[in-house]
Length: 233
Ligand code: UTP
Image (cartoon, rainbow, N blue to C red; front, side):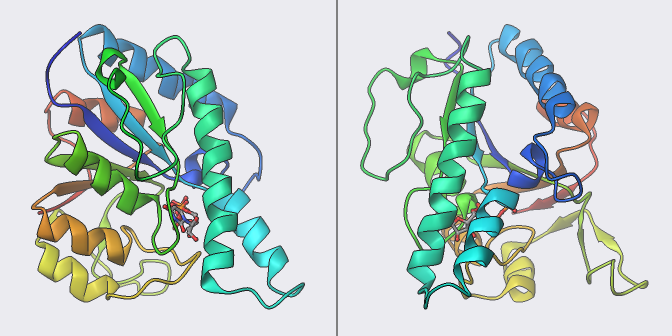
């Protein structure tokens, strides 16, 4: 097994179950698996942290009119949704993956580096899986992480609302954190969550925001070729 630093991938829930179809995207996962297979064959190792996406939002939104739910209640519904997605991804990658998902902060598995793939869900209320990806990068010695969602770049404004919005290729944490703010809102959707951004800035972790739908582009990133996306450092 390669001793290189692992790649940390935050796999947004919207890539597993896109909002548009509300179905598991099997075609995408077949291709994602092929991509991993070819990079694992080169000796690369991956931590994949799965988001809760559509499933999380379904439960969170359904719960709100039924009871007075705290942020923590909503977060736990989200966390268990990430665990379901994590178990699913771990299972479909079972030929390479560590046989358990990571689901708590206090787990210390000693044999984890024997496996080319380790899958994690969320750990505790107060953040999204982006934060867990940053903590895993810290814990397992990676200085970079890849955030896969369904946007090509971070833009100067929301391109769906503002036609003047332009893509940003590189930015500092300070610039990014001015855009996303400092507070946690369960179910809110920023290109990278504010709590995770604060931690990444403190730990000097570089985050590449890529469109996970474009797997050729992800492959270029992994091969250290030119790629489309925003790098925050
Ligand atoms: P996600 O990481 O999926 O957040 O966790 P998201 O912003 O919805 O991201 P996408 O859409 O998947 O890319 C879903 C929800 O689970 C809770 C939060 O409420 C989050 O919004 N969560 C997740 C936690 O509270 N703690 C965690 O460690 C992870």
